[in-house]
Amino acid sequence: MILELEQIETFIGQHHILQGVTLGVPEGEISVLLGRNGAGKTTTLRSIMGMTPPAKGRVIYRGEEIQTRPPYQIARKGIGYVPEDQGIFGDLTVAENFKVAMSRKDQGAQERLEWMLELFPDLKMFWDRKGGNLSGGQKQMLAIARALVQDLSLLLIDEPSKGLSPVFVDKVAESLEKIKHRTTIVLVEQNFHMASAVGDRFTILDDGQNVASGRMEELNNDEQLKRKYLGIA
Ligand SMILES: Nc1ncnc2c1ncn2[C@@H]1O[C@H](COP(=O)(O)OP(=O)(O)OP(=O)(O)O)[C@@H](O)[C@H]1O
Image (cartoon, rainbow, N blue to C red; front, side, top):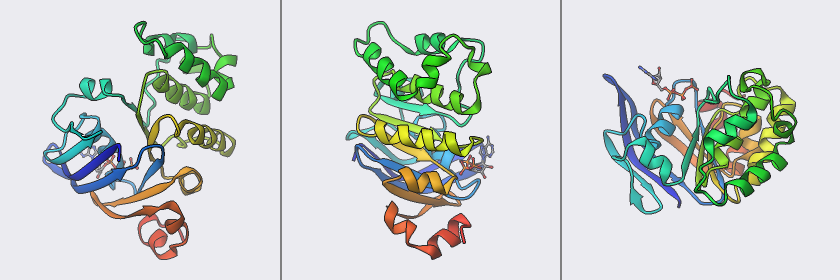
């Protein structure tokens, strides 16, 4: 396991949001977090990154406890985060967005950039366009690609399919499949079509707790589980 969460509990203000989340993320796979709105999926990603640090429990990354570390240290260990609002710079061009993310000291950055442009040819096409003028799907691609020019072992992505047309959802899904062999992925995804297409494993959160997990094939065949927690008939 590249990442393990052991019974993490996270508060936001007075609210006890995560009430014991346990999760194991195997290397080289896509693990999907599913669950209703407000179940605690985003808070789980933010807890891993140290942005809403857990008050209890352990976050173990490559055998090391990181739950007390600040976000910049967690990021330096090779964990990337693409939030739901993508966090790209709207006033900067695609090229400049990449430049900001690339450290000069990082020898491999140029090679990874070339790989990203191969994976997302749209970004090459719109190289000089401002981030704010890209379509929703292109912004999503830029956000993922910009994270991956850094040397990441683990990438956390929050709802990349949100607001995208089916064609873009398929494009993003296809690229995640290619990325996972280099960078393990934890994906929050409400779009079940996308989740089941790319996910190797799933964990369902409900009311701040993990209530089910397993191989994606098991969930695909479990109508009762899908109905109970995901509202899929
Ligand atoms: N800043 C905040 N202050 C108070 N409560 C919050 C705050 N942020 C999130 N919450 C609450 O925490 C719970 C979990 O939110 P979270 O965003 O983790 O859920 P989610 O599963 O990602 O849902 P969604 O798919 O709707 O984003 C929700 O009930 C939400 O209202």
